[in-house]
Image 1 (cartoon, rainbow, N blue to C red):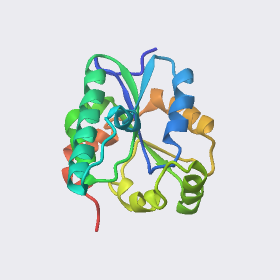
Image 2 (image 1 turned 30 degrees about the horizontal axis):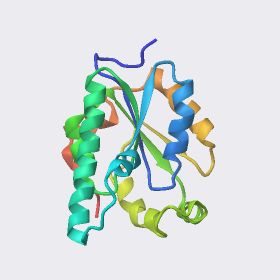
Image 3 (image 1 turned 180 degrees about the vertical axis):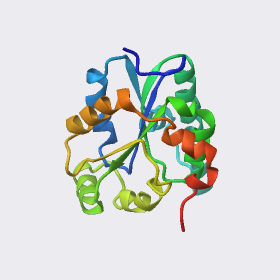
Length: 193
């Protein structure tokens, strides 16, 4: 049974801070989903970029263009009928606005991936491949829009349990979706101050 309601592919959009467990959930999701899915992560796009030294302004511009290209690649894959698991960090308001404008909102399942800050900080330290404090800088903005189709907490559930929760949710996902609500009410995707 296909989980998509239109001719485009379904986008399972995992949003959470760095080290919240999004990639681990995606890894567990791919083999248990009924249809074929691609895992698309912005980290993979960053890894494709030539390694150069940038000034702060150049780096800001390069990063924004990378995110914009990533969003359009996801939209293109979905428009081609491919199902996608997106691993994302909505740590800047424009990122959500861009995705809401680009993706078919009825074909997006927005998943909030939560984890308490002390656990995030411990994971960052154990990983050693993220700047210390990255999750702390992201946590307030990442979930500021406050609207999800389904949420999970990786401090209380394993990635495999979160993946099963998401899989079990797909056949009964409501209408309108979180993305449909965000598109209909643009003020809802603005952070509260």
